[in-house]
Image 1 (spheres, rainbow, N blue to C red):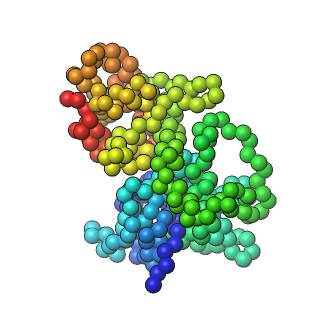
Image 2: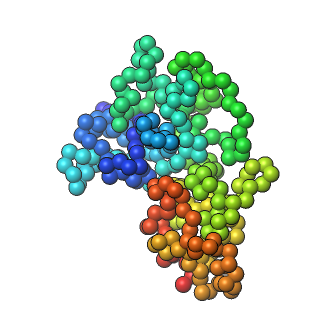
Image 3: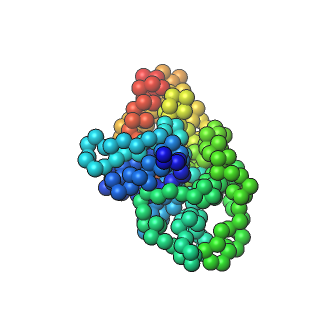
Length: 302
């Protein structure tokens, strides 16, 4: 019998594999046994260190099951349980000063072992808790931060509150709506640089907190996932209009204004001069067409 285990899946946005991290992860037969160990349990995604501006450990999700890829022989798909994927509000670096978060990669003399190169690998429970604890961050983590304490010397375990919360307690946190909303807000606002994607305004209060809100394109109550490509950074007014179907997006991300709005010209006047959504620079963070289409067909007042 294969015991369940936490895992690490390496992913890069320019991957040649058929990956959609919130839905599936494609891998070769050589990793099948390792991936099977993670079935029914949680995995974290890691962007390789050699990627410029790498996000490190950037998300967590529950692995529902593994199936053969019906389109490619000798390839397999790890299927992510719907509604479990969550981008970390605070992405976790693989290495910070002389500390690494995945302590299980160290050999007997404290050096990185060859396992660090594996695209799919199991993850020690304490390492999972450490990564998730850092990734979920704190309520105030979207405000200006103070300088962190000095890093420990050598590849040592840094001190952290993960020692007081078990890995399984961390798993419970991953399904908590308040925690998911907080992390969703942080990832969306970071992708949009705290700027309203419709009006173009970037307002920040004296404490450094952005005025914009994180809006789901396809709402959670209608099976919308907590992923940045299902999110928009919107001012309070733009968010209200978007949720009520007074504005929507075309496939090219041009902003549409409903004819049923009582003052459509006033709405058009607050749309940024391009007439299109101000989208994130990363292609992977831009609104996915299927979510935009769902909102247009189910929410927009035609």
